[in-house]
Image (cartoon, rainbow, N blue to C red; front, side, top):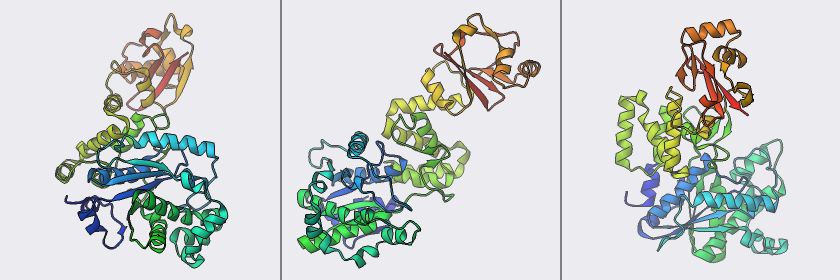
Length: 423
């Protein structure tokens, strides 16, 4: 790859760009920014494409700026939204900004010698504007007709709820952001998802009108799955980068479960693997899709970037448990992460101090409808305790057999698990 534009284009990350940008990126070192909306204290996998855009920019020698929208976050971006967001307090926004900052440091180098990343909060300037000053210095340069032509505004006007003046003004605020970073840091490029094109071009227009200079924009397609579903959504909800919201095991599983039709595109978008490596993996996927090697490479790379190599190793150990490996090398937290969504029962540890019969235990947690059926199930080899088959219906289970003395996992057949938590 000779320049950033070529790199982004090969990775499927160019949906639209201003005229002349490829030449600029090939021949100049630029400063570029992307905004992050602080509606939560964590980014999610849908934000990763944006983060990778900044990270790739820095790797090609350009200077990245991440704007965390402490100011615009109090308004809410209407782009891609069918209804108005709940407005957050300044305290909530400050907490969210701190969480996002910590996650960005895993991808951006804030101490590089020549092109260190910079993180700024647009509340630093937006919060200082008075209404009349903002209308005079920014609002007068945009006609209502111009704003109504923007897709994000137009779509909301056609909806049943409409758009409030608060969100209608968002375009002006983001345009002002571009002007501010242009003035402060000589930032001449804004990037983002394709739903941001209208906001980006508004900033470009403001810089042209007030400074007589040319600025640029580049956007990539919004990510969807081959099935047409919104990327980053699962049956259990959003997949977060914060380990407290989405465990590293679940995060790893999300990528491991990628559809064969999507996996090569995701390798291009969400990893730093080069063209040769991805072409080789693509060939393996075509010849032996059942091995799911591309999904494993993807899951390892993205989980390592977000959570570190140690969490990758733990997630892979936990994944092997799902295929019947013993629990001997796992902590109780790992086991609970694997079986987070399966039925569970609390049992006083004192109640099994002298042991409880495996037949009684299987019936008690309703893996069998009766003790007689539990006995027949055990004798036929259909019951497992901590992933080890139980063959003796006379076995007595004690707290000593629990993982870290806290958890037992009983399984019927290959898939029906039940977690017993000793209290």
